[in-house]
Every structure is written in structure tokens, then in C-alpha cells.
Amino acid sequence: MGKTLNCISPIDGSVFASREALDLEAARNAVKKARAAQRSWAARPLQERIDLVMAGVAEIGAMNDEIVPELAHMMGRPVRFGGEFGGFNERASHMAKIASESLADIEVGEDESFKRYIKRIPHGVVFVVAPWNYPYMTAINTVAPALIAGNTVVLKHATQTLLVGERMARAFHAAGVPEDVFQNAFLDHETTSALIAERAFDFVNFTGSVGGGQAMERAAAGTFTGVGTELGGKDPGYVMEDADLDAAVDTLIDGAMFNSGQCCCGIERIYVHESLYEAFLEKAIAVVRGYRLGNPLDKETTIGPMAHVRFAQEVRDQISEALAAGAEAHIETMEADDGGAYLTPQILTNVTHDMRVMRDESFGPVVGIMKVSSDEEAIELMNDSEFGLTASLWTGDIARAQAVGDRIETGTVFMNRADYLDPGLCWTGCKNTGRGGGLSVIGYQNLTRPKSYHLKKVTV
Image 1 (tube, rainbow, N blue to C red):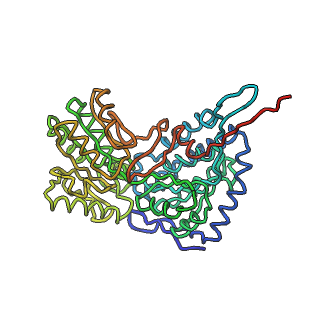
Image 2 (spheres, rainbow, N blue to C red):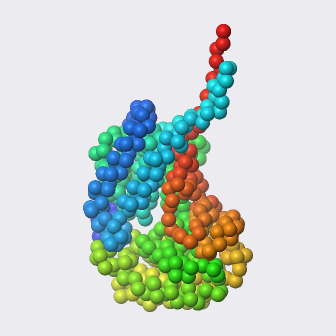
Image 3 (cartoon, rainbow, N blue to C red):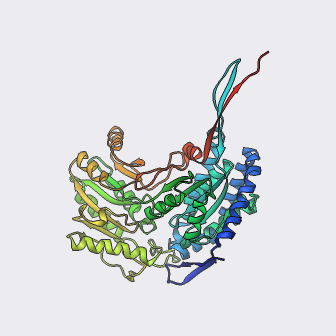
């Protein structure tokens, strides 16, 4: 066996779960089983695959009462928010609904001489590397459509949420998905890179840090294995002068602070038109001061610890550096702030893009707010980032939002909402956020390959 993987609970710093990582030979054997099972799985009728996947989803729903406190122990999300099954089920259900149309042959033409069409063919073995921040929802984004499309799946979950992949595999196997078709694997970084470099997989989907994505691409270099990545973000919100102020405050601040700011598309910087700036700031401060920081197992807690002390330290460092450079903090240190994983959510003003807190991904409960005087200024600031996942625009004018959105370097443009993944739309990014696309019909295109048929008829 390989080395021991430990999930350190942010609640108290104790080891919540441990698993032995597979050594390279055991990992190779797991992938061989997945490859051997793939043809028979793909040969099953599409509706049968859909039904089995959705039965697996339902099994996860039946476990929700156990999953919610388990997530609190592993990554700190308060139990009052009830887990992830709503989004988990929504995403899988949508992909099941559109599967038949998305995977249908593309008819090019037929006459007395030729029949021509394009099929969508599963890649084979899909490797899914999922993150800890929304461990069920991020995993199902790829697991469900990959299985429905006829691939077999090997899932590697983050050590911080060590038990999630194990639960998902148990649920899908109980529903009737063969064990070799969907496997959870405990792998360390070295074994993961070795497998990718050996071309063990036919497609790799990675959600995580920029550094992690670079490691995946380096491992795959020269193998021609497709790699899809969803990496960091520094998502902006822009509040225009005609915005619904209360709605903007409630949504953007929730988007910045929910899950202790540990959201892929969380709001990390806000630009407010000068006419609304003071009112927006006053309301935002009031919202955050109303939060209760504490043990996530306590139903009164509204914001829990960050998932790991080192994540919280990065946010503290960004805040400290900003304050030293002239920023102003508006939230007093909360009683539960222990200098470790429990971190006071913070609003900063007098910030500039010279500060790391406005450039680097924070992935924590801090947001900088800047005053702007025009769309031009806001667009320039929103694009002044190495990342591009989502942008949230607040206005009553849809044409204006579309015009501004067309000029923003981002994967998704929101108007009057934020921090949400619509499974009917492609989840994608640009710049250092990565490349590829999940969910929607495009998700199926990325999890299959085109195969063309050019058939000449024999005529007498």
C-alpha cells in the first residue's frame, strides 16, 4: 500500500478519517478493471445507464442525514445549510434529461449513393479529480454525464473530503452500477501523475488549484490525453447606478461569504458605482456583522471554520498585507476567531489592485469593495485579473448587461445573481481559470469523441 491520507477536521484539528493510498501497481490494476468493464457498460442501452446513474443519485439522497454532519467534520460547512443534495440532484437530473438529444447521431445526409453521419463515442476511462469545497456537486458534474455517455469512471477525491468518493461509490454500487464501472480510488499525487503519464486514462477532468491543474497537464504532456480543468477564480461583482441595492448587497455578500468564502465562483471583489457606494457599504457591513462564527455542528452557526488552518492563514496574510498598504477593515474580530481555522469574515475598502487581496485568489471570507464612476472603469478593473470564471452584473437594463458582459474576460456572465451553476449552461472559464467545459450539451461533447461514418452504398 501507499502512504496514509489523513483528513484533519477544521472543527478541532483532530484526524477525522484516514485511508491508505493505493500503491502504483494496485492503482494500475484498478484502472485495468475499469478499462475491461467499459465496453460492456457502453453497450448497455442509454436509458438503462441513465436509470442506474439516477438510482445512484437517489441513494446519495437517502444518506443525506449522515452526509451533512460528516461534511461539517471534514470541511467545516455549518449543518444548518443541509448539505449539497439539492444541487447534486439538479445537475445529474438535467444531464440525464438532455442525454438522448446530446448523444444522438449527427445526421449529415443520405441519398441513393451515400449515408453520412457523426456518432458520439465515449472516451473510455475517465479520471475525475474532485475538490473539497463542494465535494458532491463538483464530482457529479462529471461523474453523471461520463457514466451516462458510456465511459467508466475512476474518482479521486481531495484528502480534505476523504470519505465523499467512498460514499458515492457505495451509493452507485447499491443502485446497480457495476463496481468496476465506477471506482473510488485513494491516490497520492505521485501515483496520480504516474498513471496520467502512462496514459492510463482517456480523459482527465480536474477541479482545483492552478498549480494542481499545471501538474495534471505536465503529467499528460505528450500522451494526447484530453485534460479539462476548472481552476482558480477572482470573480467580480459590478453594481451599476440603477441596481436593486438591497438585492445586490444580499446576493453579492452571500456570494462572498457563504461556505466561508470557499466557493469556486464566490465573489472576491466588488465594484460599486459611486452613487450607491456608501449605501452599499453600510448595508454590506451590517450583513456581515450579523453572522455567527462558530462550530459548524451548532445549528445557530452561520459561518464555520475554513477547511484547513493553512487556507485561513493565506487569507489572514492577504488581509494583513492590505491593511499595511492602507486598506481599511470594517468587521471587528469575532469572539470565535482563534487565529487558526476560525476566521472573522472581513470587508475591506481603500483597496487597490496593487494588493494581493484584489489579485490573488483568496478562497476565504474576505471581499474588497471599490468605488467606480463608469462602465469603462468597471470593465477595466474586472478584466485586470489572471482569472476568468464568472462575473456578476447588477442593473435593470438587460441590453446594458449584455454589452458589458461581451467585454468581460470570463466564462459566465450573471445579471442580478451570482455564485450559481446552471446545469443547462456550460461551466467554463478562461485565462488561469483553465479550459474545457462541464455540464450542458457541451459537457457531453467533452466526455465523448466524434466518429464519422461515410458509407458508400453498393448499387447494381
